[in-house]
Image (cartoon, rainbow, N blue to C red; front, side, top):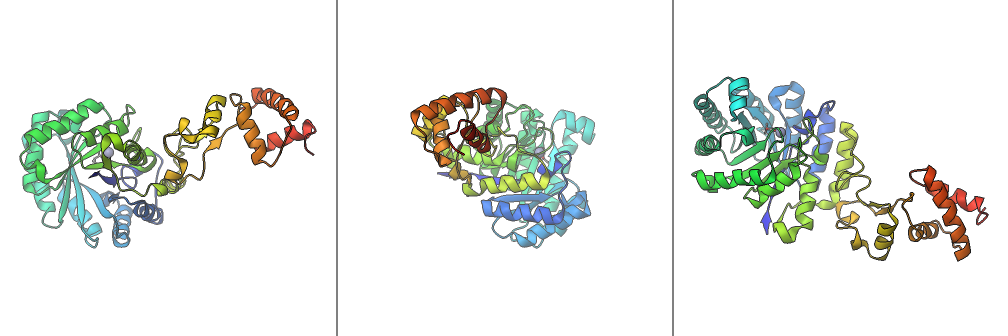
Length: 385
Ligand code: KIV
Ligand code: ZN
């Protein structure tokens, strides 16, 4: 079984979600929960970006012992110095240095020629290696880069000392097949690539971040980066709980596992949502309110007979106590009767027919019927008082 490392950037790329601002205490609380979840690497922040971020990374690096802690740095001495200041006391200091490699970024943002970009990248990795035992190097906007150029710069930073090579889809542009092909190309064309871990970092602008990450795994990636609940810049990052659960449920296909303690997923998702203020959409895979809820009569009937008819993930797997039967206009008699029994009411067939008719009438006016609505129906129909 292949072990895939998960690199969580909720506290860095996730915090770049518009409107999100975590203080040191909140960041530490999330980092501790990520450690409990079994995250391999926690990117705690971007130390050069602010004093607060440097302090947060420092505190997390001091406290967290069972996950590796890292911080982001541009390819600048002052950023690498700030990262060292923040991370020097961690168990195994690890830095994440990045530089853009796409023609658009090199020309308009960096205003450097491709040759200058190679020089800057190599110099920064060499400088970082005078402090850090573990260096991750990222080719920002890798997926819109010229492939032979990408291969050439990756080869040079590996020679300079990078141990993890990250291939970000910075703007969420790539498709799963194309992303896999980039990994294959690098594996076939870069000398020394067998000595490093290849990493995927996907954004969700076209809604393909998780699919792209899984494709990277199929094509040799040993590390996946993302965030809890998929929060992050613009449309967000790959959702790590979705990647981990996909690997678990479709283990027959991927033959790889994340090593996360999946039971901690819901708790982690709730904590991140509460502290960031980013509400999890009800229909979000794995952690959304509706992920284990059944409304349609046919589905409810199936699940009441045998859960696996409509549930491929058991709620307990990810720390959700139970599935739920939502009573609404599509619900059927079986679920309605089951709810009456759960509420402690035993009714005759005749009473059930009457109650079910009233329930259907009410469900035309209300989206979801609560237990109180059902108790009110029982009183109205004089089945209970
Ligand atoms: O999306 C991106 O390219 C990034 C890098 C800094 C790794 O977040
Ligand atoms: Zn990113």
